[in-house]
Length: 301
Image (cartoon, rainbow, N blue to C red; front, side, top):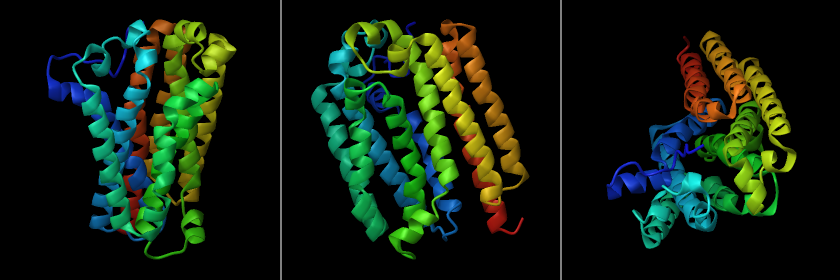
């Protein structure tokens, strides 16, 4: 399989930089923070929305740039990733390090400007995001690490919106935890499916992943288990947070697509790229339907 969402397809430096940080994945992550803010019960201001968006943009930029730097040794050996910017030389390592620095500064400055609690807790998501590349070198469950990293956007949204109004204990009580853990297990599931493409390479080179440790069949079973847990948690979020028909419809569509992703993967490993690409519409359907319902609730609709 040669599918790689990080490959460079144009001889253009700007395009190569955007591939390095996979800018569409940042846009894909933003709604999780908005869900965390809107479902928390705290009042959300435009300034908070802008700052949390900038914080997430900075963190994702730093994390993805660093991930490419840290994985040069692995990516240079794996034929599937030979077209990535740092491997092809379309982006210099020094440029990637500048993205790490600039992204980190944007993240921390935005966190400081938001409120006391986002400033104090900001190192936790940063360390979690930038330590992901080491996970696959230490254990067989980096997919859960990635899931936790993306789920932190939900927590961040809550703390960003309520940090000026409440103490830390109240903030944590108001995090929509069903959505948080739903994101964690959904991401862990689809990252496990994604790892199927590198099964032989990971086994040969000792790269940690669930398929490499347990085999393809059991890897698919574990991915499905993660996804069934995610579907249940996303379903529980509706009644827990007072969401109505829009979210219920979004949950039904999202759940169907999650199950279809697993069906495609089981039908044949050549379908993994198509199955993996379903996760952008899945994420948008689940988050946008929750956001719309939350806004309708706030407006009395």
